[in-house]
Length: 219
Image (cartoon, rainbow, N blue to C red; front, side, top):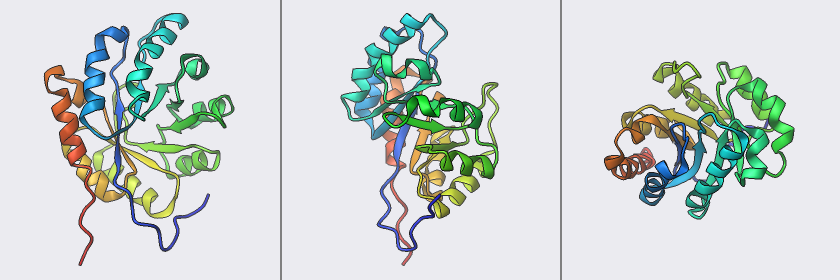
């Protein structure tokens, strides 16, 4: 895996990676999602789908896809690799290295394959070597537990210094965003905290976007 060039081009400002809550009914989140997409600089949306039959999942994804893709953002499914093409999604996010390795050839070369749940540096490097389009650090696991934020900062900084493949840093709050930007995240994932109150969703996304500003270079 290639290291970052010694004289890199000027760094681009990070963008948001929006994670939805589990969605059972597309119509229940349509207005909120459209509001979020209008409010900030969102590069990708990770759509979590509530358990349902295959046809329901595909229909739900197809209803939400234009809201996301018409804004130039990528629509990724949380798992459900077998539905990506039929639902018109742009790719999938896999929960760990094993799931990524199993699903990779179903997605590439036409669709995005991202991976999280990387508990060691070695796993992250292996994922990149196997062709991951991005790695994510810090997202909660299936049981809701997540690594300490300091460990996430450290992992993002390590990755940003050495590797070209983009990394996504997970922010559990607005206060987490600026440190992740400073550490070198290419994208900042935001999820549960932005969805807690539908009335303030757009405002929270705007505030999150404001925190994406790159730090001023040292004199």
